[in-house]
Length: 262
Image 1 (cartoon, rainbow, N blue to C red):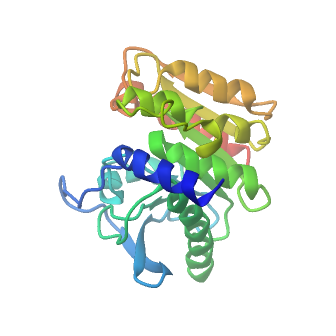
Image 2: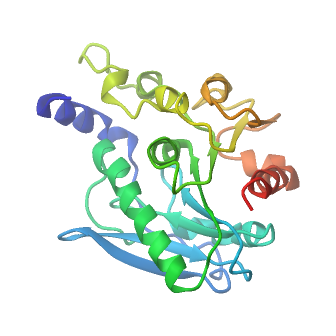
């Protein structure tokens, strides 16, 4: 991709990122702590850790959706720890206390820095379990990128409400991407990358999602090479209430996936 193409994509797609500061919804989850590290001079990112009691439990490196922050996951952290699994929520530039400006380029490259940092922190604290990656909505791209490029270090993939192609999503947001010459080659190429993934994989998608239609989840599922892949279709749910609508089944599916890598 040329510098001109990259700049055009990032300027156009800036409309897709909605950074915000933390809005606490209640007391912080017990035992939660933040690790804020530098990815480049002047740019610091937050990782929010919710560690399981068992040091051998798997860890999930989670990339959240747009308009969210890592602090938002205090409310559901105990559901992951009950599996048991440690939950580590990564943040993008400009979200929560993280600094810098988000872009398609940096939010993928920063995911690799986040994985390296998570592994180091877990190791220092004596945690020895495998690391899975999980991405929700916007976060599906960094999760899929890590699973496709670092399969020796990532043990499983979970995608919630993920997109297969970026052009239809940008068009849904009202961006004139085709007249500007933006194609799938300029984006994360989630669908193409899924064809290279054979790790244990779980796809979660709401049937009534009006932002990223369930057909995107189906395409990601079909492309994945894991012979035991699983797909949870959540009826009567949309893009932002899938976990609530699925209830205990949501975490049951995640627990079954993680049982394959213990």
